[in-house]
Length: 256
Image (cartoon, rainbow, N blue to C red; front, side):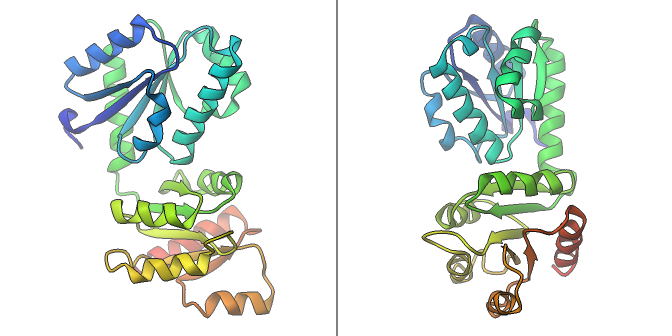
């Protein structure tokens, strides 16, 4: 497990609050590395993939402001798409109210005010351990349809660490900075399609041996032959079941 001095936490506040100052100070007292995103929360994309965990403070008046709700959507979607852990902090009634506006908030851990800092520390330690240790393989999902990608992550997320990117350029950037054990790659993507991404992967020595399984929506004999002519580790029809997808992933990983 990581030492607390090596755990990077990013605190996000849409509206400034003394509560956040208190959280930050107490987390620093517990020896975590802490970055506070106040007015700079629009830079969150530069932290996803680098931070170990996010803490989002939900203040009571967010739902009263359309601009604040738009910002909340952007923050949650960014963290959710990258599959990173986040803790929501706030009053019970306000979190319930915001969750009705933003249903996927239910996917994140919650901590109610007033904060029990020992509980927060234990929660952070456990979440980081679950994310980074525990022997789980890491899978990168590359698909220009984030809705479908999240479905896949929902199917496999209990068994594997998962990350999502939505185009080929993002995939290469992610792969050269992060170790993964398998890539699920959409065959039909605009601009840079799956075959081109596979070609780019194989041209990079550090990542060329990562097994790639194509995700394809077309199951005709001709289309399957075209997919397999590129010699991937396999292919999966997007119409497949959760059980078949997990079985295919297990079969491919067992050979690595």
